Amino acid sequence: MVIHDASFLTSNSRADLCPAPIVPEYAFIGRSNVGKSSLINMLTGRKGLAKTSSSPGKTQLINHFSINDKWYLVDLPGYGYARVSKTSRAEWAKMINYYLRNRTNLMCVCVLLDSRHPPQAADLEFMEKLGEEGIPFVMIFTKTDKQSTSQTKALVTDYLKKMSEIWDELPRYFQTSAETGLGRDEVLAFISEINKQWAPETDNA
Ligand code: GDP
Image (cartoon, rainbow, N blue to C red; front, top):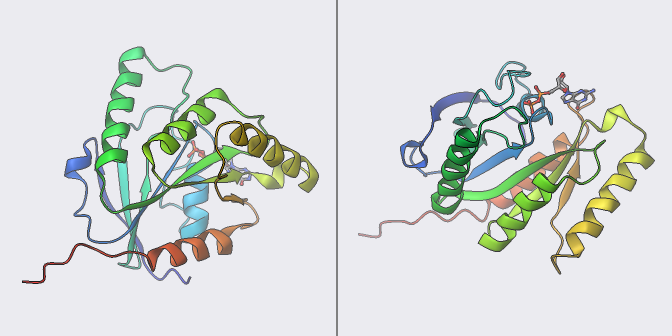
């Protein structure tokens, strides 16, 4: 997929205020510092589109970007911040749950996982919840340039093993690097493929 246009649309704390669900949408989420902003910038080829290294937990908003006027890329506030109050955590859960359950054009959630860290409870719990709710998701292993291919492979195997304890059908996964661009073509090809399944409710009147 060639990205000829990527622009910021809105930041919202409420899913009902998000842009009209007229195109398919892909949401990116992960723990603080997982490399979400870097990945979004790498995928879109726009260096400053998503802000990198902002203070963890500060931006608790749902950020929409329009890509090629054909689909929305959504930057969701992350989870697993150590220094966030219970109240903020509860607010995050309320906002994200509402978004995930009600966003009619949400095609897939991309769960970002740092390829150097062993399976984390927060990630496993979040994916388990997605599975329970029947929300399609994929795993994206980030920062693969920071270690050897075999180390990444071992981590991926670890995750798949953990996931297979819960699910019969394992999610699809990608390996990426914002440094080298690894995985860009694969992730964008996946989005192109899913975009073909988009069938908006049409008014036949
Ligand atoms: P976010 O908090 O999830 O949005 O994470 P950021 O995108 O801000 O990245 C956190 C830190 O990891 C920054 O210092 C990035 O430069 C670094 N980083 C992110 N992705 C990669 C990657 O693929 N490779 C390397 N080497 N560093 C990365």
